[in-house]
Length: 145
Length: 111
Image (cartoon, rainbow over all chains, first blue to last red; front, side):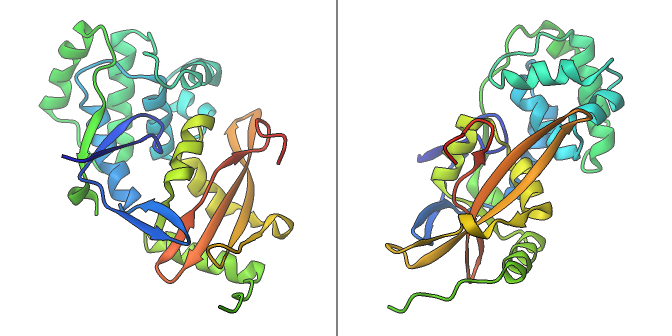
């Protein structure tokens, strides 16, 4: 099985069976990034592990917010905390599990592509006990072609 | 092969906007790598392409591939008091636009 790791969304995503095309002399990944970002958003929200700085930046970008706006809608005191998280994309944010869950819940409500379900609320117990940021997210190229 | 004509600023903007509306913006592997190194996200690239302007003095003709790359420049608003100065070189072909690289002007002072 061939795979390709892209970090274009701000955190590692493993694309399974990627297709490449040479265009304008450049080897390009032949996927639809709008579809990829929607798949990745759902995967990050439901990830059974703690969020990383890169994932926070991705969620903020997906919602079309700057750091100040993101801090505001998430009920944070200011954008400096968001800036700190995003400056270490691969590191766990070390925020409380309650805050982690609140951000996922609020992001879900704002996203318009997901609904708050029991599956999401049940996730709180999983991330409360998680002590790492989990593995990379895997997405099959045929799902985002 | 004859050298292709360089597009005007307006044409570059038109082609990029059309590619964006049709979801026909793709990344080169090189751009993916540079974005990772510089912590530049896909959404920041898209914002530059949506709101930026063509910085014509930085456009380049790639003789080996017989194509132009057009430099799109924009300051992204990171927060109420911080901006990020980015330049995104793109190539344009019949299928859309190819993001060729990603440059943070505050990190890459040689540009």
